[in-house]
Image (cartoon, rainbow, N blue to C red; front, side, top):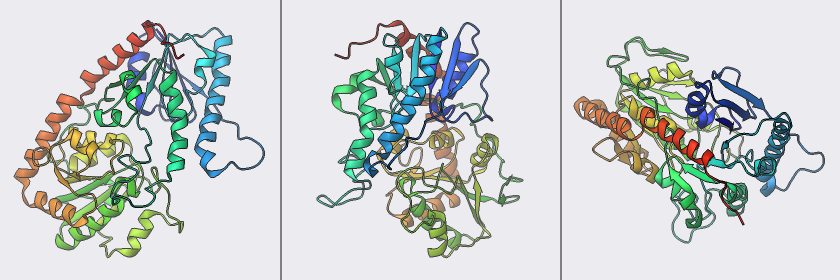
Length: 414
């Protein structure tokens, strides 16, 4: 089978699918990407880099910025795809992440090639994340409604143009308009539960960048791509300050980059880390920021965690949460829809109100005190990961959906 994969940040959510396709010699796999990340190499997969060309002239209206970026990515991939076609490559199926723009014009290059899209999120100005925590009738939500509608323009095109869609969770699929949901199958990417597995006694000797945890017995962990309100970083820091004050032997470890990945940056130009360090009284000898970690060290941190904390607004469920489940972490998490789909309060995690840092601190201390409860919750979270998110089960389903899409005639979009 000949497959064209595309994600702007190689390999993204398509890593496992790309590796499985590349492992079979009969497949020809091309992965088109904006950021090639040379540290990532997948045998049997050829990278094809596309480079958006910034237009000359005036800066676009602020509401058009995400749309312009998507159009530039779409144009860039259209150019390299057209060149691929002139050199004789026509895929049996195209599979790409929706919303970035890379899939925008591929049907103009190969009108008869089925397109499968990975749909993560639909931006609804009245939806779950936009007005989260606001009283009925309150003013504008977390992001301006006009900007959210603009972001959806590219997603709507993919919903219309694709022959098959998938979304990683039922709750994320439910955010899309009713008319398009029949196209979207619920199928999580899957987690390597063999790699992300418990390792009793992993804490002693754990040495990470900025965090020598040798001999530390109480390790509270927080992981994120960035540090932003969308993932509850300010609330976590308030909870961490309480825990550090109450428990002199506890250490808190934050892994991730000092940036905003979701939502808007602070208007004063400071990072959320800088702001929280200024406004909170924190024992900096027991608060550690590791930055982004290589996969192995990240897994080791989860294995060593006494309590792992995950917060999110009603939004895309993070990979890190399912990976923490798979490692058997004792979980304290936000009581929000994406989390409740994955775990159950009192059975596989302790869930708390997103806006109550004191409740998170109390739950963390409960699990640090009651190690038997922590072990039961961690074992249940691990079992859920094995039953619902195991790569060994989900990857074959993913590949079969791709093969099925490749065999079916493209749907009429008229």
